[in-house]
Structures are given as structure tokens and as C-alpha cells.
Length: 481
Image (cartoon, rainbow, N blue to C red; front, side):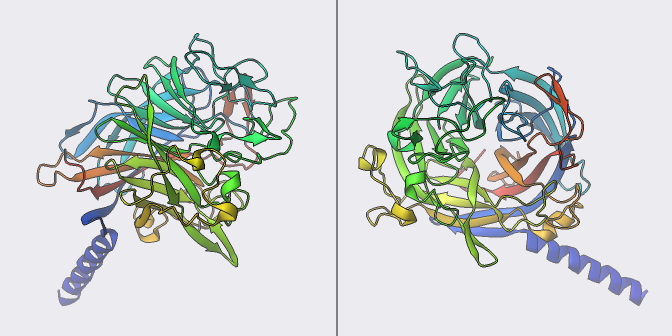
């Protein structure tokens, strides 16, 4: 009995230590934010097809359908919108039709199997331009511009005459319409609940990609028989595939924040070691038909070491906690299930605080003046502060759900790209500041049983990368539900 009692005591002590280890707090501007640990995990199969018979595209962006979220005993359920990006493009871009996917979600916190989150694809809505014509994931070529009208600015256009869209983040408004951010522009578009384009936000000229003095929206991922851009990367403005990766609507719905994945080319973005000074734009969208730039700030992205190399962790998603505080998901690249590198060196969610950051909106920095020549921040600019919060790669947390970061490089090793986040209330009267943070991966449509744009495909990696949703419980003192 003594041995058994000792064993039970040790087991209890170990579980208590694990619970304590999982709970971490950080104080930002006098407010304490708490991560209470990973509480649920779920999967959607890699070969899942949408209602158009094409391979489902997982999570480049995520938003929650207002009014759908509810608690039923210990379980929670609701509808989320998952945004895929420009389609399967292992060998260049294709004429994939951008879309949004409605997913019904049910999860039970505390279940340590990988079915604690049950996600079911419920509907798919294709996105169109203002005339109802399909959009395309194809890379724009030189001269690929749909000229401005009274209602729309110049927009990236494919050789087939369609607006080119590489969607990366989504925010749902109270009227059911969506803001969707784009990497090609980089732009922000507004779509109706039915998927029709209603408007477009063109950022300041400092963001517009320029080659040989001309705007050129290509990302050096040419489609079939198309020419690669010259030079391959822009000389000014956003760099290839590093556009508006993160976007968030503030809790009151009146402001929209949008942030580059990493620095503009002329601001240190021409080197993986100096691309850490990024701009975040705050738009007044109280009237979403007439968005206005309200402020603009600089965020210094995290830096990490890969052997002797210093690298920048580019950001992948943004979630608003208030008008000035946000969750920012940043990560490395090239490591995870389906890739040669098995172990990620950096995948974290930090809190950024803009309250003391310099506002550069409307200044010379929005034209040709660089905020960070050769990657060195202009001394007149105070950047946002960055505070560590959640380590996605935490081995102790992952192992409780049979997951890992690193070898063996199988389906239980996290995939490379974690790019979608949303907060939903815990609906706990005893803890009104508690929320669940949903985080999803972008699987790049990687499967051995794929079908898109009229053709089947098998990814050369040999992997089937499921769409995964991880759920953390967090305390956010700036939000009360």
C-alpha cells in the first residue's frame, strides 16, 4: 500500500507540475495575460474535397462567424471561416479560383487524443470581382494591371484578364461581409457574404512593388507558359510572397490592422538577416465603404539563430486584443512534416503593443524614404514593443497530444506553416476574461490524392499533410465577454 500510495503521489505531483508548466503569464502595459496551455487538437484529412470537387485548402486565415459560438456542457461549437491561399503551386501558380470555406467546429477541452476538435467542411463560397467574374491565383506578369476606375484602384491582373489574388488573412464584419488581405498587391479587398468584391484598399506607395520604375505585382511564381519577372524580386516595395500576411479587426469592429509578412525590399527586405522591420497599418473602417488610414507603426520581428546564421522569423498572422495590442504569430520556414528539415527553430505567438510606437502615417516614409536603410531602423522611429507569450513548439505541451516538433518526420510532427488564428470566448462565468485561441496550419494543399483546376496531382514529398487546429486556453484582460 505504501508503494502504491507513493506512486499515486508521484503521479499527482507530475501532473500538477505539468499543469503549472503549461500556465505562463506576461505583463504588458500593466495588464497580465495568461496562457493556460494547449487544451485540444483536431484534424481534417489532407485529401478532403470541397463542394466543387477540388482539394480543400486549409488555413491561411481564419475568422469566426458571429453569433454561432455557444457552449454545451463541457463542449463548445460554432462556425469558423477558413481561407485557403492561391492553390496548389508546387511548379508555378495555376488558375485556381480563390474561395472561402465554412467549417463547423465542435471541441471538448482536455481530451488529449487528436479528435478533441471535430471540424466538418460545411460550405465553400467562390470569390468574384465586382462584375461577378472569377478571380485567379495565377501570378501577374509584367503589365498585369487592371486600370483604376472611380470605384477601384489599379489592381493586379493575370494574363487571362482576371484579378490575381493570393489571399492570406480574413476578417468578418458585423454585416456578414469580409475583408481579405492579399500578397500580390499587397492589397486588402472587401467581399460581400456571397463572395462578390465590394471594394479595395491600396496601401501607401512605399508598399507597391516596383521593377525598373514600374509597378509589377508578380511574385516570381509564373503560371504555365508565362515569363518570370525581371528582375526576379522587386527593387522597391513589398518583396515576393511577403505581402499582407496578417490582418485583424479590433474588438469594437471599427479599425482594421494589416501587417506585412516581413520588411519591404528597400527597408532591409533584400536579406533574410535584416528583414525584421515591418509596417502595420491601422484603417478606420467604421464605415467599411470608405476606409481611411488612421495610423501606421513599425514592428520589429523576432530574430533567432540557425547555427551561425542570424535569421528573422517572418510573421504569419495577427489577432486583435484591443486597439493597440495584438497577438502576432511568427515562425521560421523550411522545417516540418513533408519537408527535408524536420525540426522548427522558431514558432511563437507574441503580444505586440503599439501604444508608445511612433505614428508615421502620411509622412515621407509612406513615399520613398526608408524606415530602415539596410535594415537599420531610422532613429526618429520608436517601434512597437514585443512580449513573448506562447511557444507553439513546446515539446511538453505537444507530447500530451501525441504531437512533436522534430524527428521522426511523420504526421505527428507539426507541419511548417501555422498561419491562422482566432479568439473565441470560453463562456465561463467564473472566468469572464478567458478565451480559446484557435490556431490552424496552411498545408499548401499537400496530399497524395489531390485534384485542382481539372487535374489530379500527387505532391512529390510523399506526404499527406492534414489541416490541423490547435486550441489554447488564454486569459486576456483587455477583453471581457
